[in-house]
Amino acid sequence: MPPALKNDLPARRLREREREKEALLKFPVEELVNIIMDVGFSCDLCAKCCTRAFNGHVLLLDDEAARIKDRYPAALEPVPFFDFCDQEGTFYVSGYTIRTVKDKVGSCWFLERGRCTVYEFRPRVCRIYPYMLHREPDESGRVDWRQISGLNQHGEYHREISREYANQIARDVIAFEKAVLEHEIAFLEATGSFFARKGLFHVRKMYDNQIKRLAHGISVPVRVYSHGSFDQWITDGKVTKRQMVE
Ligand code: SF4
Image 1 (cartoon, rainbow, N blue to C red):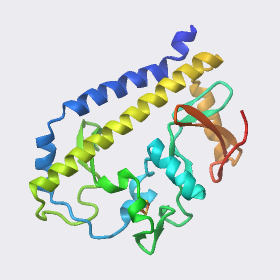
Image 2 (image 1 turned 180 degrees about the horizontal axis):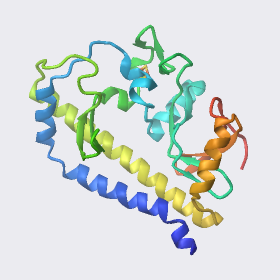
Image 3 (image 1 turned 120 degrees about the vertical axis):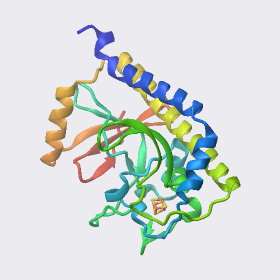
Image 4 (image 1 turned 90 degrees about the vertical axis):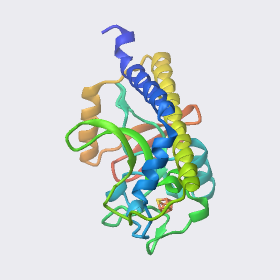
């Protein structure tokens, strides 16, 4: 296969993210404000949102990952979903998340007795939650905009929210989603140029093989995108550690 085609996957994903960003910036803010006011979400402190079972991982932007690394280094780990795997068996992920503890629901490292212990310090995704602005498939596979995460599965609804406050939430959500897409675009650009420089490419079969090795507890290398370059980690699927190499 010609090298240009071998490296087409990061480039294709890059184009998708750029289209998503364009669509996000065209979304009418007023419509999001009205949805936020109609839904009238109010947190009932159930703390479900702070567990991996309910919500997947906490998405950290580069500056947030750096702050957590400085103050709470043990709380940081690579995002648990691998985007690519090169022909040498190294996975690539887009950044960092907050580690979870080993309880039944995968509670956030910072959650204690149902409360966030770093509330003033919490990352942006925790501040805007449960609001979002993504295009996602529903249960029937139909892709459309989603504005509230876990609708009707947590919290209380139909509380009064002022237009001024809803407006502030809507602007914060769009700014956050834009920052996330820009981070992903930077990751995909960096992966594409790293692959081109090192003669690497994504290999689906190697990806599947490495997933099988992980299932047997065998360690595999992971490159984690951060601030324009890649940090080297190693994981056996249970424990993920930073490696001092390269
Ligand atoms: S940082 Fe705090 S608010 Fe965010 S998921 Fe963890 S416990 Fe919850």
